[in-house]
Length: 193
Length: 193
DNA sequence: GTGCTACCATACGCATGAGTATGGTGCGAG
DNA sequence: CTCGCACCATACTCATGCGTATGGTAGCAC
Image (cartoon, rainbow over all chains, first blue to last red; front, top):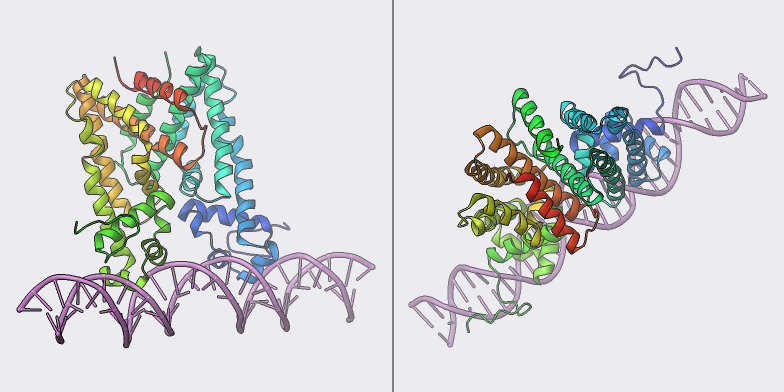
């Protein structure tokens, strides 16, 4: 009972609190919205606090991105990794990618900030890992090396574009049923029989 | 010989000059880089000039976006529209979309600025038009309405994601030959036989 | 209980970029 | 030829947001 930390019963803050706060801001308003005064207000303190924990805003971004990359590396793909059949594994991956789109909102927000020098390398690593995962699965399905790489590239591009079109653009606002049908169409098209 | 306007023999400017200058900046450094003082420097004048032609920065953005939307509406898709066979039309469209990626650099830059209230509606219209074009072609190939819409969505998402991964992210830097092979793979996968 | 230190507030400086005020100049109409 | 307007320069104001300087308080060590 040292820590009965409910939402607003703030005690002293730690660097980690600022990092998750930054990630919250990123997912809700994008990387550009991570301003130290705004973030301080949201945490119930002032900037005087911030500059004790971090030397600069860039340092906060760096730490927040490292935290996200860490917890993301095994989250999405770790869930479906135990599935042995590669076709079933890919299908479940595709279905999950849409089902809880909330989980991908940070990735989408970071896609919008690829011009930022701190964001770019992180996204490069994460995207590469994900595409490697796809390529391995496609190889297990029976594709040769080149085919698997191309299909992984295509599938991942479709994923990235889908996030862009739905989360960032308002796009067609397809309802639940139509969305399910779309995912099944994607599965039928991008996963060989 | 009234107009021997070489690159740097500047005479007086018109609003159109500012608009194309803004589009240049967008394609090279993104929407956020459209600052009036920077743009004025690039045009060889000062901001005093700008505020004669436009009441505000937003007005310039609005005009530049309208100009782009106008000249884009029939540029990309108008080229391949005369092709009668729908399969061939789609294939040529896909091939062109990668061949001169320079043409799509503005679209990609605008994708990075979907949070901007002026950019969002423009991109919504342009993207919708393009997806409609795809859906019509897929219908002519023999797909039913739902299938065609889903496939159009998928193909366009792949296009958007591809732009994001190559132009914004540094992604795999595939050389010319490998890129051609990728496009052919996409054609084989997304265009039914 | 006293003092040190971790955490935070207050009040600055300073750079950037939008927008304003005002005065100057070249060019076409008359 | 001259005059007015279209176009532009100069010199400000003002808001935002990063970073700094410095002083205050709460809680644990001893």
